[in-house]
Image 1 (cartoon, rainbow, N blue to C red):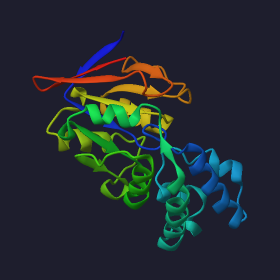
Image 2: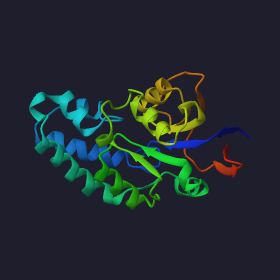
Image 3: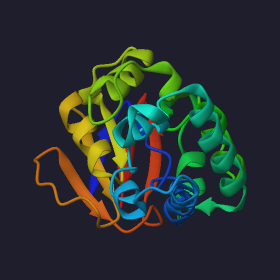
Image 4: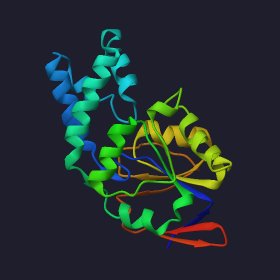
Length: 213
């Protein structure tokens, strides 16, 4: 058995708590096809980025509120069918509500739809694309979440599934658990790589969260 102790747990959302990867790729492929863009290029660059960052990457032409709203609408419709990553709901329900947060590159409305569809409880704190200046892989999102708890990020365990998110967590200084096999990164801050969350247990003793798997 492996174990780690912390004061707070920070979760990415899509691909970490919610099994939304295929759904997100489908909606972006639909959007790219609609605008006669290279679908493969779009799909290679969406994970861990905000909608705004993805649109800017494609072309300054799409960097406008109308295109952002178009993608958000597609996302909300698509994410109405997603489910939770195995073990996600059970794990967050074992955590004290005041000790965990979601840190996502998604927009708030889109992320809320993911959570509702997957049955993820609303967290004590939620950092979305509207709250930050710099998105992942910049450390700002995770530093902001840790500061919201009044903690150094080193006292937090961060669950992530995407390269940009793991790089953000590492740059912030957190302890990282990677979900899935899509992150070919080596770092002493990565404490485990797991397929899903089904093996995790959480205990809260004297203000400390003890995670085991």
